[in-house]
Image (tube, rainbow, N blue to C red; front, side, top):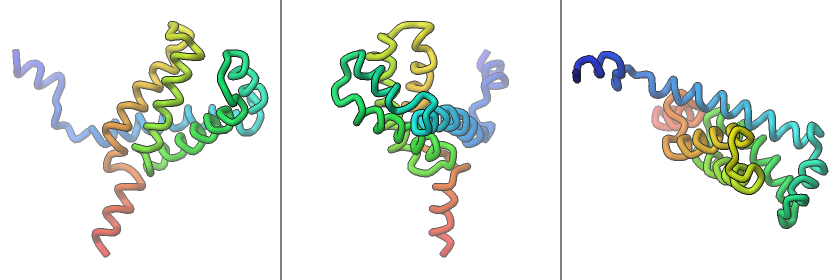
Amino acid sequence: MKSTFKKIDQTNCGCADKALLAIRLVAGIVFFVHGYGKLTGNPSIEMFAGMLNNIGFPFATFFAWIVALTEALGGLALILGIFVRPAAILLSVVMLVAFSLVKKFSFPAGELDFVLLGVSVGLALSGPGHLSLAHKLIAGDKKG
């Protein structure tokens, strides 16, 4: 039985870095698109701040800007593979607030927030992997 599981779920296939790259790219694109949309008017910061204000969020305009910048810059960080852990921690906070306060832990309305929360937590724990700009920069420093 062990050999069957080993054949099916090999853990030493060398694919972890490729998996992290795929996860970073997909999540990064989603976050970037959402943040960039807020920053450029689709929906506008004012609309997003209004939604936050309607649910009773304090300092709605300030936090609308924080969320938009976190999503856009955090998404870009995930795509490039730099500052992945700090970006993922901040994105986790954004997604936890979105899932709990905005979506009220409801499914299916909050499923994207829930998935992005899980991905963000996973990336905060794992880091970017070897297929990242951060790894290339670190490896380049060791050569010189």
